[in-house]
Image (tube, rainbow, N blue to C red; front, side, top):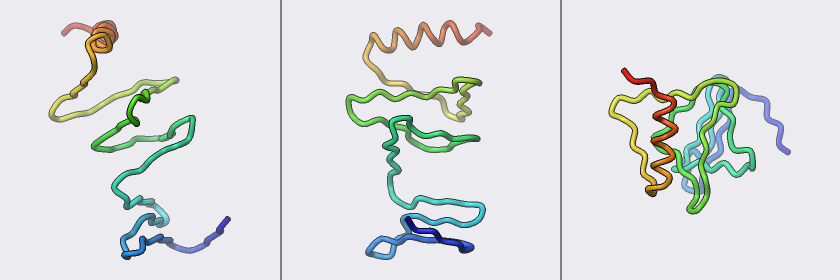
Length: 101
């Protein structure tokens, strides 16, 4: 284990690109992809922003909020692609969840 006490810390690739950077109020991962391999997934205590959330091929992906609500704020719409049976279940779940205007 490495214990570092400083105002900031940075890990660089062999070509000098920042891979992991920490400061008092900010942590940045500079790789093109962040993979979470924990069996329980990732926990975000406040909010998360990302252009893409994806599971490995043939693996399920779940977005859940066991004690609250899950919200998505979008400016251009939400696109869901799935096989027909999955879409039928999604439509039924959305139909039950969204009240008519």
